Length: 352
Ligand SMILES: Cc1cc2nc3c(=O)[nH]c(=O)nc-3n(C[C@H](O)[C@H](O)[C@H](O)COP(=O)(O)O)c2cc1C
Image 1 (cartoon, rainbow, N blue to C red):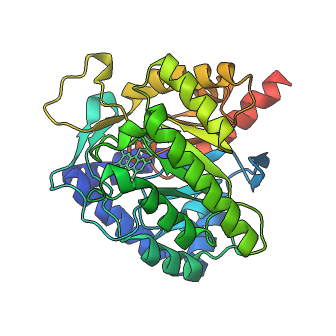
Image 2: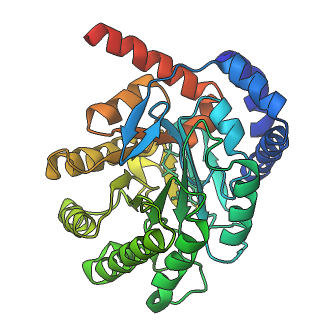
């Protein structure tokens, strides 16, 4: 089945420019999303093994998730669940719709099985996402949890960044199983400043206070908030981030986002964040460090360059409780989550 994708489907997609191909794939997935019978058929065809796991208080049917950025507006979480993903992280969403950066802004590096993007959080805004998800993938009718990745709008001054996160937190709390606070996309000017203590501390404190007060006033528990970090930070910076996150009730770290570095000698004229195989090792080192530094106490979602069972297993062996993928999905196709799950199950049966 994997071969069908690689021999027949991928060449068709790769003939189009990268963003057009992505849009065609998203339109198809959004169309399928509308028909429960088609979703069910896909679920039966894929028949991904389940391997339940609980992380930061949320129950997941398996450990493989779809990383943020693929379904920016939450248009097809049900189909992704049917494909075998044990969670989907939608977004990054900003309070109001924004167009993102001018095109072209998405580039394949086929030989390296990598991507460079500078999309810049193109999305329809938090309110539209909330309406759509409440209608199409409501809580209580989900097989796989939904994470919502929230970010800062391009036009928002750095000094008002907290307001953006608070708006999205409040708007989307009813549909999110967890939030990811994204401070690490390289394509929103100033966003990565929030890795610094003087920016990060007030941001996380404000988000935590709001999360607590929303939970109290709605008579429910807080929605777990995770923090997504960059692979380009030094270990000493990550150490401080871990401390600040722990002190401010952050329930987990998503490591990592794309890199502004050009790993493995990649020379490419386009600016933006590098993802895929080229960053696998870089993100792995971040996960190892965070896991060791937190004595295994901070749950980590490992993401960056997962393209097969071995790369997923390396992230788990490094301490990730869950993993996510994006670029591997583009290169390997829709059977990747299932193939990884099968491979991990086989591996676990050898080691037990
Ligand atoms: C085209 C593209 C768009 C992305 N958009 C987002 C985004 O909106 N928010 C985010 O947190 N990460 C975004 N990412 C980063 C991914 O979620 C992931 O962290 C990164 O690509 C590393 O994983 P991978 O190597 O499996 O792709 C994007 C990645 C790509 C390739």
